[in-house]
Length: 359
Image 1 (cartoon, one colour):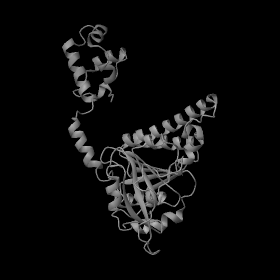
Image 2 (cartoon, helix red, strand yellow):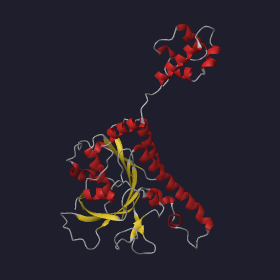
Image 3 (cartoon, one colour):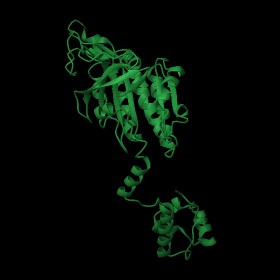
Image 4 (cartoon, one colour):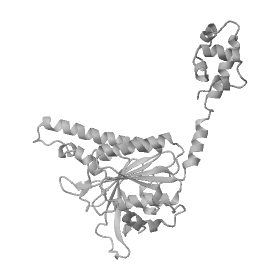
């Protein structure tokens, strides 16, 4: 921070101020970054001594510098300030136990892929986590990136009553911001605007804590071909494979690294919803605990390693007791792969009228 020399206390004499101004030294920045011996030689003889000049520079440095603070004190202050609304949880005990540290805690953020077949509950789970968090923390906000235009007001209002008991339930939808992005360029622009807002307004309230991309498949899928996402065929000329492979994976990697950096830098929980695709060759998915799982997340094998965890949602496999329509349908959440929690674990939950419930 630069301060005019005339504002320094004790005040600088008018004669010295005029002499310094003649040398274009008008504020503390100019004074601090001009070597004292050089400045003394340029000042009129008898204006100030070297010792007095060094003392003046020390005063200018003291009032211009930010107050010192140890890393321990800074960490403790920030942890207390944000500890509550950074704890992103679903409120469903089995799911929270399965996710473990996937969404991170104070001072950290994660990117979690949520995949599964259509109707498995991906959007329902993401919406539940967002509304549960906003209903519990009045200082928190969320951003929902809609890439298909399918998120309707009716769907939001239909599940909102399930979160009405939260301490901050009033005004939940006012803190849920929705942006539409139908291609990768538009999605990157949304992320850049979000980063700028968080960086330039550190005390923003309510502050975005969750970002949902529903879904990432239509954003990245067009960047990839069957070659770049699944590997090179023996029957495909190399000259046709390399450009698509390189460009497709480069676009995917760049975007996902942007998400990862945004999550870690600003303490966001980012949920990236992804469609599913068939296994080739057909058979059970080795990442699943169930032989009935014969599909996998879309966008190729490389995509899984660009996130912190991959959560798979599916209908309950054979062996679960039938549930009445009133009680809701049983779904299973599996942790296919995770850097921060236990992989190849699973739990059941209930999906009723678009809401996530305890089994």
